[in-house]
Image (cartoon, rainbow, N blue to C red):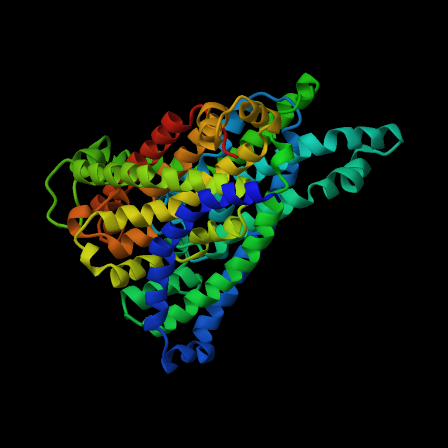
Length: 518
């Protein structure tokens, strides 16, 4: 690493470190400081909390294994042309931007106590694993497909020339080449599953509550800072170890970017492959399909009654109408995107310029509990409790790593000849970025902005801690109605979920139409 390169990377990294100190380190330090007491040691003798840790580990490992087992053959199938292949690639990234409360409501609609199936399967491992696969399979498939197509084509063809059968060539040649992709997709699935909040809270019950859910319960209902802080330490330690492996694997994926030539099958084989892929996709997405269909059935029967009731004045201050909740959601989401954009861009540039340690430290917000982060903000910045900036700061903190991680492969994939030519013509570092790099990474930037915005409008954990009645967003309005009895409230929750789903998809398409989910 040259001195010039270190200096350039550090210039980008310093503002990110300052942001992290304000938005993450100081608030979490306040939480941990409240938990420094002999009472915190009681977690080591609490059998229930140990069970929460063990279940969180089991949940993350089981979800990662299942996603990999399904993702490898699915990625392999994308090497071939079949009817609807391009549409599947477009749809595959949709679950990753779906708000957790929308997905949980979809499962309640299909498999809950008032679900379409007629049998309550909430509180089972089956539903939780289905939700984990729903969220992570598409992204893992995209990672594995890119690596498989770019690195496996030539060597697999050579093995076939030497007489290896297709199956033998895949297991002996292609599969070992997927090592970095397996670590990246499995690690990312583990991180999001192990620390998941919304889905286990609404679908798991006490038996299958994750550490994140237990942190929320201890802080929100018992104000038990010592034990909650100890759980935050447990969770952060596990996530840090897994994330180190993920970041190492993800750094090796840049050569796999791009869409290789697609192989052609016979018409019969292509239709059969398409039927298998789309049949599985429809089953996987069936909770969302059930949510959309059921939202048009209210106590009065088929119609728009669930949606029309949202326009009426609400008796509960915490249950705003459609206009208020949507306005709050958009206002906070767009404001947080304006803050996450420069931070995420500087983070990506610093990592691409090889700033020491920034790759891990900039990723840190994804390793912490949004619930504990929200509590930390209340403790660290009490003067902001009445300001919407406390929500904007939380949303931007949790969103910018997604934007940055989308940009990093694109920046690493730029040809150095372009920058060298611009430097030869006298362009400085910032001028090279604005005139050369930015136009080349614009698709990735659009995709990263879409991820950040979708993350902000669907954020649930920190929102439950920081929100005030007058700030209630769509996620809060849905959760409030799900907790109330009666089919009318349930129908309104379904209608709000469909609206939030449509808003997420619209914003994702609007902002990220030129980009690919990297």
